[in-house]
Image (spheres, rainbow, N blue to C red):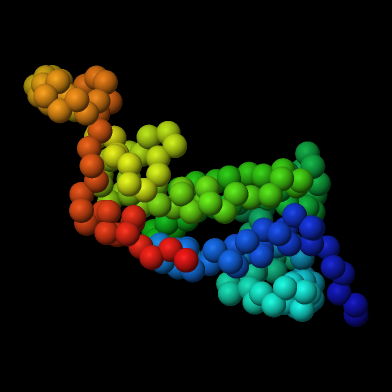
Length: 191
């Protein structure tokens, strides 16, 4: 039986970009896995075509989910769009199996690999520092200190902000992340 080649041009650019960034993810202790409702022979033909045309070997597995069982469990098949085509998603799942981030892309817009790396770094920094990362956080930036839980702690936080000029109010102040978090998340050799 001849395999049907149903991947899209956008997917091809993404799989190549993920392959090129795989070392970044590995250095962040993150494993990439692809999932597609295409067949294994279709994947093999696609990956071989990429290799022949670019010399790039895809270094991570791509799961063939022909009947869409996994895709349906994760809400990747939208019956409003199609009963068989997946919407394009990125799931960031932590080491405890908890889905921490879901990004959904339309079929005609490619994924932003740099942003996915930033999200992984941000999640790791927030977890390690026991804080939060603000809008547009990048490695090297301060993190948000958890809000005080008592009135006394609120007053102490207000004094600290006045002394250190490290926030705008008791509920929003910043700190440099602990050194062990910087080493764990920010100082990884990327590339």
